[in-house]
Length: 271
Image (tube, rainbow, N blue to C red):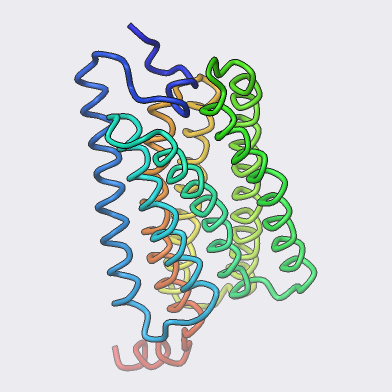
């Protein structure tokens, strides 16, 4: 029986094992990811009153052109439902848009708590440079693996590069989240007399960002354990959760930015 977690199966071919449990797990994770992505697209159009802005477009494109093709491509590949070039094209470009899009989403809300133009410009530069340096070789190696009959020429390079890119993008998201968390904590300490409601909002934001980081850590662990098929399927599912958490972040950020201290004072007097 083939090794279910072998990287060669994760990129160059369908699942060749006979584990019904693993097949069911893959189908469930990817099916849930696809359903959640379609639901998320609907929520985006229902939630936003104006279809404009970096936050809106990065969230929409990351979902529709990232998670959806990534999920479909993996389903087609693992269960041998389409030619390998079609499935790899969907997964490769879907992954590129999904992961870079997530960083752009994180960046697009930084301006709500960060006023330093140098910091914002540095974060944006990091996202663009990482996308060019990491994603382009990844696309080349992905097609190289399936074009090479033996797969050995590109597979070793691809396996190393896969770990490298996971580490780079994990670090990138942690950096952006860390900047957001640090600035959030500073805002908490700047207003010691503000209401409990505002404190609750800020602590919820901290919890959401911490959950996103924990998901990234778990994916990185699976990557270095070479549990490739499970890792890439779980990664797609996790990204739908991360994007849905963005709605929670958005609503709480709006509450924070639009917060009126006089409202709480009035409520205190009335009570």
